[in-house]
Image (cartoon, rainbow, N blue to C red; front, top):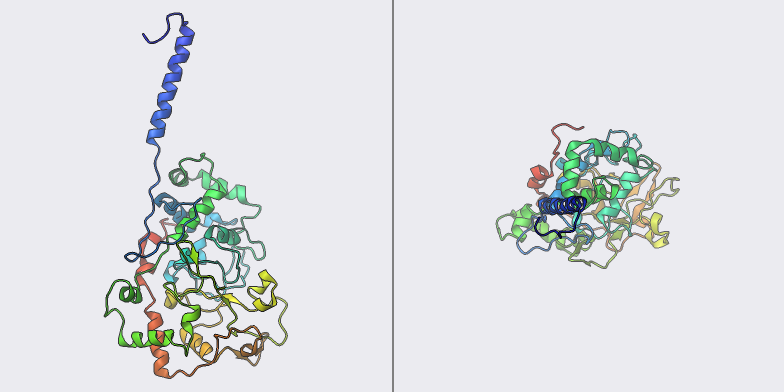
Length: 389
């Protein structure tokens, strides 16, 4: 009290004391605020981390929140579906259906892609050259109306209210976004989901142990022969599925492979295209040369992510290899009847090649060496809810 001027009234004294106490409370509150913990990717020694947006840095708290959201059916308008409904961990975060099914039962046009190492993608979805971030891609399943997937459009406030009422989410959002207000937002939700998906890295396959950890015996003789076939000019596999992620669409340290990672593989060339025929990248770009072009996905964890191709039309790796060995597909009947091998936009890299049964088995064995069992069993990626809400 001796620091107060003598002429101050008692009311002024109280105001002064109140301001001091308020300042102390603010100081204590600021000091006690939780500082988010930087997320550290689990990668091979000296391996480049994936690019991370400046406005959405990776933190443990954000990844944890995103993991809860990923497995939560409350994120769909009708409480029936979560992100994990179409991206199952046991299947390398893909699914066994040929094409996905939305929360209202509408059948989707394309196969649900594996999320393995998706953080390294330069583009997202099967055929969209302007989707270059996970955050942007997430908006499609959340808000898509034709067909409906999660069904957030028009239901945003109701869905956010569900999350806001949950005591677990109140804590998780506060920890992940400590500098923001207490109201849960869609921006926070999308950023947290993107952070969890970005954390889904897989680098513990036999190939990884051979290539990055110096285990010379990690691959069998058959797998080594298959690696040689994969890298050969005969099969051309490496041109579309090259690099550490076995995908041409790869971005690391902000430096992307400049080639367009979209290709027409000769899968279809219908004589009379159905009204709803999927033209791939053409449906976005409207460029004639993009008809039938789709992105070359990663080949990692292939054993778990069947069926294959953008429409899930090839059920096994044997079918996939036979398809490429024939230089495309010729359908003699059905609504997509036609010779895909003769498609005018088919990639020059897709051409028939001879392959003995032994070579085919060696190639399949090598592709199996890209499977990472620890990825599909990693508890850090599993459902954090004991039971789905």
